[in-house]
Length: 141
Image (cartoon, rainbow, N blue to C red; front, top):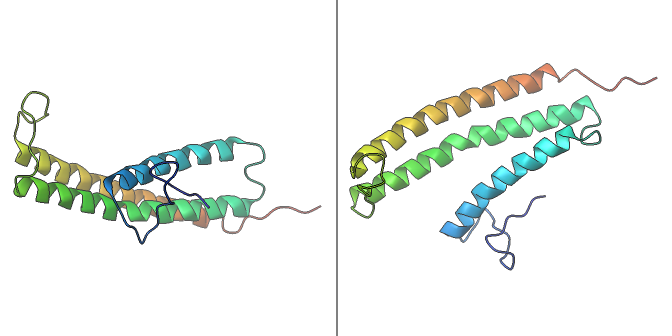
């Protein structure tokens, strides 16, 4: 089990919340850290013992990636609401769209839609990869 905390003394962040911006950023950082841990674990000679380990990891990765479009959609909706209500603006000096917050929000929508499509494709491919190793098992002498 992985626990994610916004700060060392905080309680672990749970699905039930309460949620705050620091916790949300900590969860995203935790995802990055979890992928780094997975990379080290699968690189280690002891990180995988059986084909069923690969089967399980691929299934978890597929499930995780399938959840990404929802988070992208929700962040996009947040930005849309912030820009529409005037609570967010783009700084004209260093913003990518010369101060046009609506253009930035439209671009975010376009990119997150593309990322969601890519995530759905990746999730499908990971599920297919999992299926390819379904019948593999350790050979016994």
